[in-house]
Amino acid sequence: MNIIRNWMLENLTQTPTIIEAGVCDGLDTDFFAKSFPNGKIYGFEPIPDLFNQALSLNKKRSNVVLNQLALGESTEIKKIYVSDRFGKKWGSSSILKPKDHLAFHKEITFNSELEVKTVNLDEWCENTGINRVDLMWLDLQGMEPLVIKSSPKIISNTKYVYSEVSLTETYENVIIYDEFKDYMISIGFDIVFEDLPWQDAGNVLFQKKN
Image (cartoon, rainbow, N blue to C red; front, side):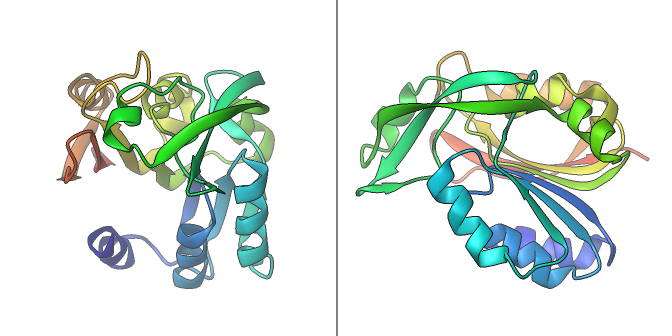
């Protein structure tokens, strides 16, 4: 985590527009807000317990806007599989049904489901008046490629994408990293660095060419 945070401090402008999807408890949001007080951070978190934690942590941040929404392919109501770890809500909840995740992370369970509102990112950005993004920070438990593919307009005007990637079928029908990587390259992104420390997943930073 220190690698990507140091990279952001060195490479982002002082007034970045950041979209963070999969805010969880808001700790990364807090880092963005403190590090870039003149920027704007738009966060998405659909799980009520986690959203409230993030809201409490960042409620005094004038540069943070939190949305109790999930990013998806379209704007609709969807079922999400809710994750728990040792009795507390955890950041592994997904619209996709858990698969290999159950074997790799046995301490994390999915014992409940919840209906949440999903939004298409292109539609949301158009309605919000956002036409460019400096950094898109995606931690969507397998939905990252689908969100990107369904929002080509804002993705084409995004400088950096930092995304979680799946190395196995962590969730049913998830797009595996090799295919995801090929797609990102095909739409004009280069790989800045890969952080793949786990057998099932990791994170990758992509940069838009030119």
